[in-house]
Image (tube, rainbow, N blue to C red; front, side, top):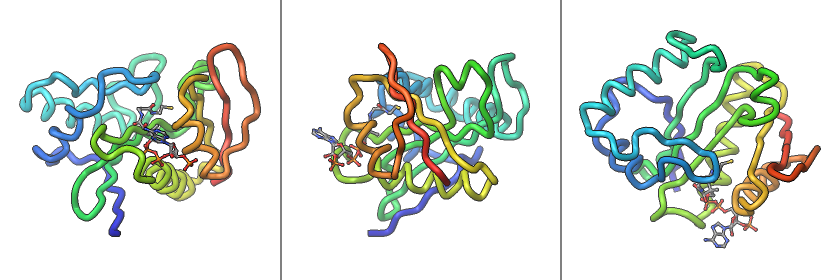
Length: 166
Ligand SMILES: CC(C)(COP(=O)(O)OP(=O)(O)OC[C@H]1O[C@@H](n2cnc3c(N)ncnc32)[C@H](O)[C@@H]1OP(=O)(O)O)[C@@H](O)C(=O)NCCC(=O)NCCS
């Protein structure tokens, strides 16, 4: 199998758009605003996400973050986000990374591979360890984190706090 992690580009096209329609607007706290957008709105969104990775146009609570696509055999199957650093708010909710696999491609190991590749990216960015904040009921995501040597450091009524060394 050929796996490739590509960073979002403003020239991304229909294949990524179609994938993002297969990921809910909000599933377990993973937010996908492209679901329900027109193709033209998505092209504008690509420009704002690209700017966000450079720290441009951020809201007060936001930090720079990169968006990636996982391709398997040349087809996009999932998306990941990686924040460059944490704030107190993100330490409580959000963490460094988020990921989602399109519905038709779940339970094939791709979520585990996507997180592995996000960790490699974090290492390149000199991030020593990443935090994942996973909702309690999200067993599959917790498994994805544990498959990548995640250490559960805390659990509260809402979330698991899982750290992974890069
Ligand atoms: C969480 C998510 C990314 C997992 O992606 P995935 O490609 O299905 O993950 P994997 O195939 O690597 O599976 C991970 C584990 O979950 C299990 N799993 C995944 N889907 C399953 C299903 N439908 N039924 C039972 N087990 C399932 C796998 O068996 C595997 O367990 P194992 O490690 O014991 O073998 C995917 O379900 C998703 O996109 N969810 C919505 C967004 C989300 O919740 N993101 C995380 C926010 S923190």
